[in-house]
Image 1: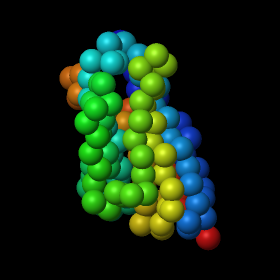
Image 2 (image 1 turned 135 degrees about the vertical axis):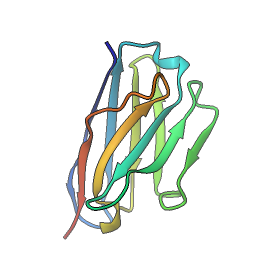
Image 3 (image 1 turned 90 degrees about the horizontal axis):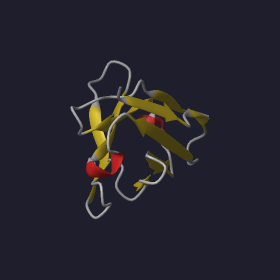
Length: 114
């Protein structure tokens, strides 16, 4: 049974940082691209970042480039999203996704507000 469990969300002031984690199980984690997406209220879910199994290829949406960093630890079956210089526009539910049959996690709320 595939499980993706996100954690690390919360309330942070503009300019602050958060680190999201996504713990995976039920598939061979190191073989698959992992991605982060987000969905703000009233908006469609949008791509944030992705990383290949070997971590050799990493991509970001233009809106987060230079502020967010995706990484993974294959020994821990976990993918991370380090978010710095957060803005109110980054407020959303953040989801991780595996390329293994396109499973999604349940999401974690990130709110950027003063």
